Image (cartoon, rainbow, N blue to C red; front, side, top):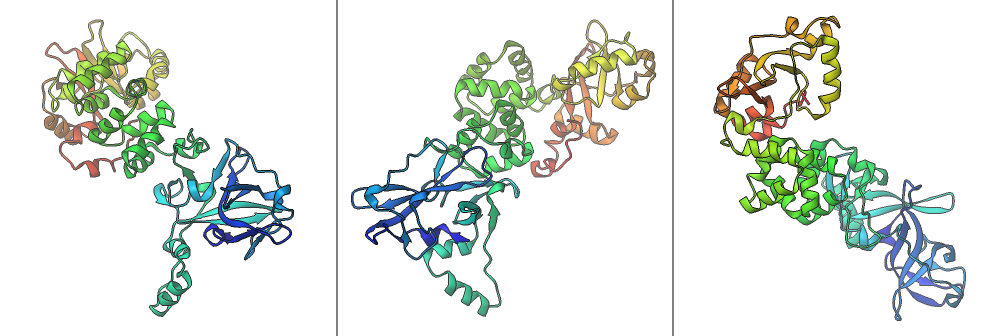
Length: 418
């Protein structure tokens, strides 16, 4: 094992002992079949400019002075590829994502390991000891810590558990790996919140639209708006189309009216219409916080047919725990739960197992009154109707409770109706 910080600055000499320069960096390959970056070249500081020396020209890498196995004039310069990374320039002192601990951390040092004759980046050191090692007094700091009865331990993370942030350099990652896209949206949102606006923007650009939309739904509307406003118009519209209409309405309310209308005009007509409908209501009313993504069926279907409809439409609904029954005019007739549907015999008509007595909210009802009803009756969602009883949307528990409990507490509630 060796640390990058211990190698930087060491003298590099050719096979005849002629000094070429000092080690300034290491180049590592990130080609797809490697779990850990493989060291492929040295960057040597030379009076005539930096030299790229392939690793096969190096006799011993881990040495007080790094000897080469041939004369300098016999060495063909290494050609950097799109899969290569400069470790000191592109990784050291940069922020990376710890996908295991789900946090943004700064790289203080890199630990190298030799396996089957090849050198790899084994671990990332994010601890104070890694920083002290580069500054020089690491051993002295350890002695002082021991005298105080404490121990300085390196904060080691395996390279397999980290992800680089997308950067401007052509050899940096441009598309996020599965390690990022597989994170829970709430974890990804927390990581995004820890980054600067520029860094978070680059990370979002490297993700697919659905992943971005899911993550944005986990952060506050103010931060959502700042991220959306930093995106290209095309990407912003695509992301908004993937988000729940009520989330989009809250987000657009944080933007200027001109920017809001601009994005709505770029969205697909159906999605934009749903959002415009919500924006027409007061922000703190049932109509303003409801979502139009729910499942509604006709009463003449049987349980088997209702289940088929649910399979077709469930992916677009905010919740499938409740299925609403409406007539041809869209008036609410009843509701049944997923449990009711599963327990019903296949040929049983929906009207026989639906609940005709349904607690509803009017479009003009306050958010507080809806939240109180949800809490009182232990509901996951409340249907929202107009004065004629037509169903316009539903208010889910998390959206209703947003006003009456702190946001930090609300985020801890299980999203069991998703």
